[in-house]
Image (cartoon, rainbow, N blue to C red; front, side, top):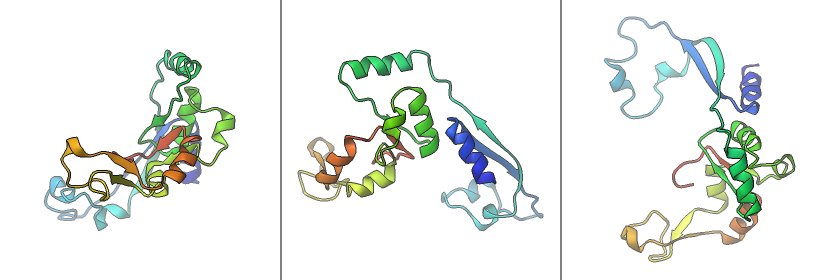
Length: 170
């Protein structure tokens, strides 16, 4: 049921935030908050036992000029693509609102991909200078990156409009 609520919010271009709490016993949870999160992993105490208070949705306001700017680009022959950290459902909904993605385009399996999926499909990048996987040890000014699987890239990029859950390497 909770996953359905989250999906419904995301489909309405809302980012979801979950609020919950957990009662801790004295000494439970580590010496300091900073120590618990130093290594960036989720500790056992953080994984279970929370009581859900609510799920809420927040929305970034789309500036009024965005849709017109996207249309001007389209008329000039420019394909606008959106790269975001949002989940795929939210990203697709926002792209539709901004007219980056049409309903028909959204039906294509490559229209909206998550960054790591796209990166895996193209098998990553390679440095043209040293022929090693990128990032490599070449001087930044010497690095010329190329897609490893250009055939897949050429097929995907024609349809790709939204790259969701993106990381810098994507």
